Amino acid sequence: MKNSYNNLEKNLGDLYNFYIYYDGEFVKGNEAKISIWDHGFLYGDGFFEGIRLYGGNLFKLPEHLNRLYDSANCMGIEIPLKMEEIQTAIIETIKKNKLKDGHIRPIITRGVGGPGLAPKLCSQPSIIIMAYPLPPLLGTKPASLITCSITRKSPHSVDPRIKSLNYLDNVLAKMQAANANVDDAIMLDHSGYVAECSGENIFLIKNKVVKTPTTVASLGGITRDTVIDIAKDMNYEVLETNLVVGDLYTADEVFVTGSAAELCPIGIIDGRKVRTGSLGKITEQISKKYKHLIYNKYLTPVYD
Ligand code: PMP
Image (cartoon, rainbow, N blue to C red; front, side, top):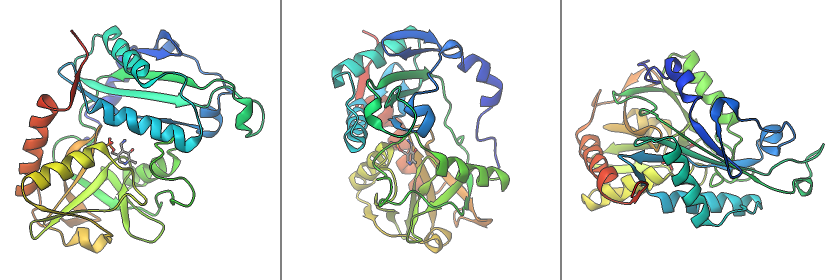
């Protein structure tokens, strides 16, 4: 395993010092307190987003805000702010922290409730926005994966388009990866097809065709959409289709995508070398275009 966390452990003290937005107030992260009656804490009853800030610009902010409101609709939670107001709160949080590059995490919880599950006791959803520096989560060198025993949530239980606060399956998957001394874990869906990794979508390239699982049991990643558009623009055939682990073992190139991980090539899966062994040619081409895009297109400026 390479150092996936880019020394994050050493910098946690600094990270906790960044200001967060909490229901209209700014509080230092290490001083912020959430009620133990909040359903987000009690049941993972809430949802969140992860957005990248590059050189003072938010990448694909409208797409992230739309997904935030989609999660809200699926969960029957009314976000107490309009989309423009959340956007303003995000921008203010970044400014408060004087951040130019980093990761922004808006979180909505169903709010403070009573004993038991009844959502109607939660009168007011809470809004929290975190903003902090974050290097690419899996590093930039080819990463290693295992296939883990934890399946991704079934669409018959929690629809994967809900970016819910309940990431227990993903956390358990990540633990299996750490125990196996690799960077991350491939999660299969309820039918045994490849779904995604613990916090990233997955792609393979075989005979110049770019393939990725459908979003039946994986998050419709915004980086995934960006990569699909880039590959199509480059005239590669792109297939969103059912894939099995054997497709990954026999692929020419494999990479994963996510706002936190960005685009990370995969070198090893379940102890087997991916054919190219390191950064594949097509992955490199797509990655270059992606890096260009994040500084040049789909940007919302934070500073005037
Ligand atoms: N799948 C899961 C489970 C995730 O948590 C994430 C990151 N939020 C992704 C995929 C990638 O999504 P995006 O590209 O929108 O960050």
